[in-house]
Image (cartoon, rainbow, N blue to C red):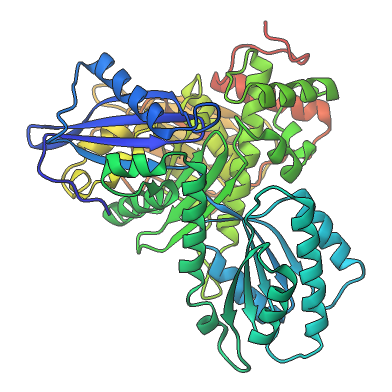
Length: 578
């Protein structure tokens, strides 16, 4: 991925929408270690509009806090950015379902945020009016039109599409650069050009009769990547200055996170899931030991800058189900308006912190579902819930006031089963693992510097009666006698446990529950796990979690989980902190 020269120092700059972070690697006794990090507000928005001012401030802060001074002739540099992570995309399909499914599968790994998929093959009533309304409401970066190579009647439909797109572009009189990717017959592409003229960038991918759809889509990935890169450069003012500082164009953060996730999965032969929740985006990347990689990202769905988009996508009920108090319209409106007026501001009350984390759960759950829906050659892969390791990163997870809050957000979004190691990129320094020499086999120190071990989640599948013994745990640690703990069904508990060499862990579920080796059968971790900062997080809520309760019972359960895990200060049902 990224080669570094033989130097004692390496700088990695990560530019986000909300903050710019710089990490310093130093060679210590022949190994690369994380020697320091600094974070400052990004400077990509008006009135500053210069990414390099934020980089300069971050370097100054690093020098102030570490006493380190840049030696420009020997320092390696790497730039990563999550700005413009994906291109907002919709699909209009006139093709048959087989062709559409092939197109959607090819889009899975591309840097796009899918907004709408319009299947117009059956020409439903009022379809075009609905398409027009959605395009007006959600301006796109890319519109993919899947045409038909044989049916001449589609000429009229293509013309109607051209009229709609032209009307949308006329309504948005700003310099909105819409990229239209048309996959179909050349004559139909010419019809689109006639209607749109210079109003949009039209890219044609020919689709002939009896031509395999895979051949027509062969260049789609490079085209979408090119569009996403152009968009990122537009959103990063003084992009050229950042490229000159690093000696190369900044690396896309999703690409970086995918590389790191894949490296860890292959090195340790495990299933790794990385969750990234930033100020204005959310992303998930899953890798199996064989290198199979799945990605999903949504721009404009971060908790700090765009909770209103999460609300529109998930729905109010989905967000509200994670709250231990009533969410009235005034409180919700105040929260959203405060976020619009002061993007990135920290919550000022416990209630707002809990609300922010409820939005986070739904944002993360959305990309986890996108990952699970993806297929390879039409076959589903292992679900995210089966991950051996879950890594949390980004502003909302990494900066959670209490570590258990980050844990709860990840557990509720993914609902992992069995034994799952949890880790957190607390210092927002994960991109340093991009450096090939820093992550070569036999050098785990840099991973320990970057990734904070949170603990181990233990979660059985199945359901049983509430408040009855669900799990019996026997934990052992060096120089201490083994201890047994009973956890009832429907409960969550945090149990101290060091893990690693000399520690033991055995778990016996109730007869109706399963830890992955059969109902009622005892289990031990199949890998060497680490208790980390929290120990064992025992999640006996069952799978799936039952939140379809009446409001009072649901709020009582949410409150119970928050209090037994110590996630938040004491709360009452009124939503007031005490």
